[in-house]
Image 1 (spheres, rainbow, N blue to C red):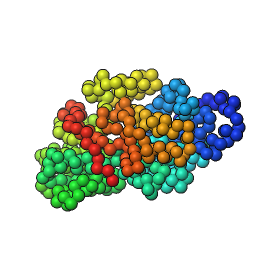
Image 2: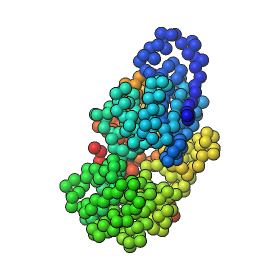
Image 3: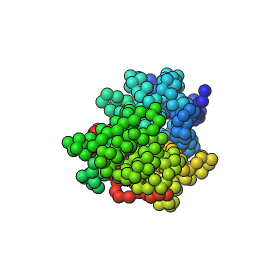
Image 4: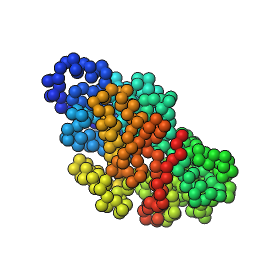
Length: 404
C-alpha cells in the first residue's frame, strides 16, 4: 500500500506540559505543540496516475517549509495515500486519514467522483475538506456542505467567462454546446445560463451531449454544423476535445471555438487533433505556462524553477501539475498563517471561507485567490488564450466569473 508521508521531529514535545498537549488533542485534532497533520489522497496508480505529480509537488513544498521552521513553530506531517482514482478506495483511505492518522484536515484531495464519495462523510465528521482538486461547482455549496471548499476555477465559472467573452465579441452569435453528460459538462451549461439569462434559449441553438463511453462524437459534430451555429463551446475531456477539433476541421466548419481548460494539453489534445487544425482555438487559463517565453524572467516562475531544481530535480517542468501544486500549497500557507495559533478545525474552516486575497507565484497576474462571506469560489478570474499553431498565446484582459 502506497503511503507518502512527511515526518516531523517531536523532541520539543518532551518539554511541553502534558496538560497543554491534551488540550491540543481535544480542541484541535491533528495538531500538537510541534506538529500539524494534513491528509491527502491522489491517484499515484491507475488511469489517472499522471495527477500523482500534484501529491509529489505538495510533499516537496512541505519538505521545504519544514526545513525553514514550519508554520507557527510546528512542522507539517503531510500524509498522502494512493486511491487509484477509485471512489471505494478513496473512501477507505480517507477514513484511514481521519480515524487512524487523525489529520486536522485534508488538502487538495483529487477527483470529482472520488471526493464526491467522501464529501458527506467529511461533513458529518466536521473535518475540513480544503481546496478539493476538481473544478466541479458543487464544492462551493458551503450551505449544504459547510466543511468543503474548492480552489481552482469551477467549470460553472469557466462557463460564465465564456459567455461574457461571447457577449463581448460575438453578441449575435448562434451557439452550439458540446458537453459531456455529467456534472462536468452540465456545469458549463449552467455557467452560460448564468450570464446569458433570457437570451440563452435564443443564442444557444443546439445542445449536443455525449457519454464517456461513446466511441466518437462525429454525429454530434455534423448536427451542430447543420444547426447554423457560428460559435462552438466544447465542454469535453481530452479524448473528445481532440476529436471535435479534428472533425469540425474535416467538415470545413470554422466557428469561434472555445474549449475547457481541462483539454488544452498539447500532448493529449492539440497534437492528436493536429496543431494546424487547432489554430484559432480559444481557452481560458489561470496558471502560467513554463513553455511560454513571456515567463522566462518572471519572478514568480523563477522562484518556482528554483524550488523545482532543488526539491524535484528529475521532474518534468512542462507538466502543469507542478505549478498547480505550488499554487495550492501557497494558498494553504496563507490559510494556516491566518489561523494564528488556533488550528482547531472550526477556525481552519472559518479562515478558508474568509481567505485573504493573494497572488500565488505560479498564477497569471490578476488571477488571484480569495474568499469571503459572499464568495466561496477561491479563483474566479481567468485570462483568455488562443492557439497560434505552435503554442498558446494570452490575449485580451482578465475576465471574472459572474458568481453563483
